[in-house]
Length: 170
Image (cartoon, rainbow, N blue to C red; front, top):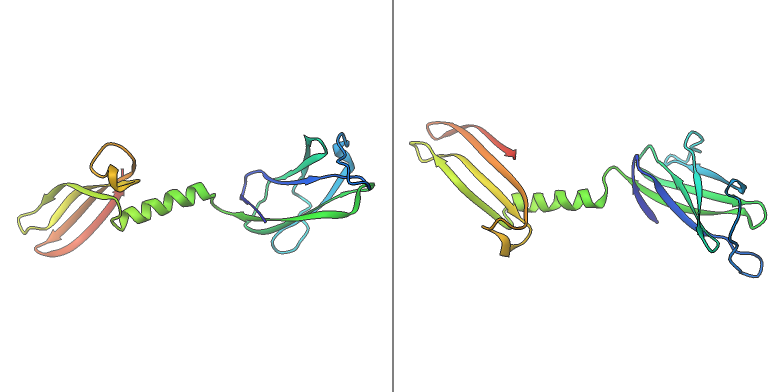
């Protein structure tokens, strides 16, 4: 199953072979037809699927999904596969690079590869301000290398009672 992101071009690659299993290059792209089904199983007739020849009998179908879930694309050619070639594409709201970055930040806020500095305390000994830096590895903690994110913490107290607490990404 292929994966892609909502609103970005998704690709489904396929090869065309003749009855002797020889790859067939040079097919006119308009000869391909398709059915595209959204995650609800409804044909997505408003979404255009385009085709590219990659070379040597290999082709690519392209479309831009408008929702998350599992999409199904069936490509047809009247001479080579009139029954259709199908594939499924899992569509997400976020790509894995974004998810990876978010996970690294979450781990950092759980104090993995974490530095707390520039602390400020009130007269009651309560920390009212500090800077937090999250790093990509333990060896980079305390240096200017491998910084994933920086935060500024601001807290307000009445005596020893915490009134407000903010963690702001810088």
